[in-house]
Amino acid sequence: MNISEHWLTDVTRIPAPNFDERPDPADISLLVIHCISLPPGEFGNDYITQLFCNQLDPAGHPYFQEIYQLQVSAHLLIKRTGEIVQYVAFDKRAWHAGQSNYQGREKCNEFSIGIELEGTEQVAYTDAQYAQLAGVIDELLKNYPKLSAQRIAGHSDVAPGRKTDPGESFDWSRLWGLLASQGD
Image 1 (cartoon, one colour):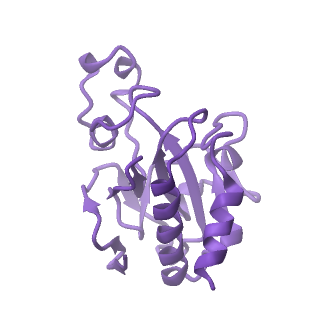
Image 2 (image 1 turned 45 degrees about the horizontal axis):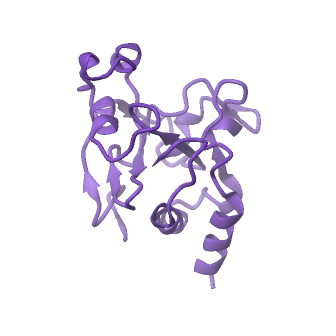
């Protein structure tokens, strides 16, 4: 896995319309980990891509009637199988964090990369997801000098009280261990 022109190589690329320019494209200094499943608790379908590409059919599920008009995206989605889908180039601002603050700095979308894990806050993430997430983070750290392992946060950390993902099911110590072993 490599990064070329702000896109991961050897992953599925589905450009989403929900992004814009960063105020400072060189200021990529935070990774935000999220989780998502559509409908809630269901995995292995194309609804996340449909949401990020403004193509979610409100008649497809009662829950979709509440969210189909949202204009959101993330840079990456890591499916439960480990498949990675990239929607937005890393030098662009994806619309993933919403109203947010990290260490006193607001508007995290301006300086962060958003990574969605297909899952819920209550269901354990898969081995394949942890392996791919660690690989992606390792590659991002090599390519974006303002990023560091100390600047990785959950959505719950940048939007406390509003968001709770990636949730209690995310094993942060496992991620730190994988990242440490890649540095060896």
